[in-house]
Length: 41
Image (cartoon, rainbow, N blue to C red; front, side, top):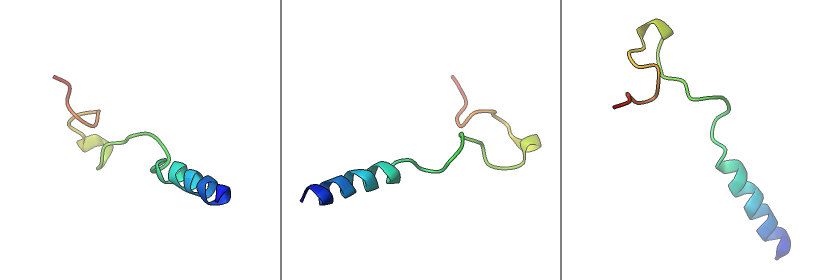
């Protein structure tokens, strides 16, 4: 039972990582309107 809980915690941690690297806006850099994910107000 402990092994199952440990594997569940490890799998949950790895699944929460997402993709590697920083947040980059989609598209070519010369066509980006806002340099961030969302415009600041």
